[in-house]
Image (tube, rainbow, N blue to C red):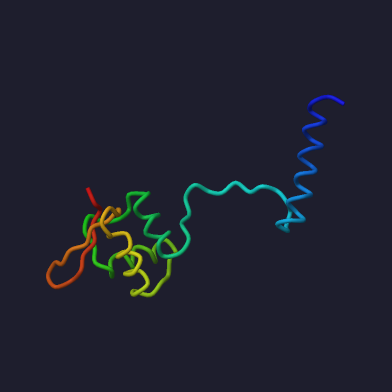
Length: 106
C-alpha cells in the first residue's frame, strides 16, 4: 500500500467518524470568511462593498438594505447600527437636526 492509498483510507475513516459524531455528510465544510446574514450582515455587506452613504439616518439605511434584499423593521436595523457604532466600531453616530445619523468611522 502506497502513501496515497493510506491517506485516502485515513480520510475515509475520519469522514465516517464525523458522520457518527456530528451527523450529516461528514464532510468538512469550509466556512465563508464573510457572513452577510441578518441585519448585522446586511450592514456589514454595505460597509465591505463601500455602499454605505457618507451620512445616513436609519430610514436611508433601511431603503438601501431593501435594495439588496435585506428586509427588516426599522427598529431591528437601528439596533444593528447602534452595535456597529459602539466605541471602536466601524460606525459613528451623532445627532443632526434632531435625528440620529450614522457615518463610517475614520
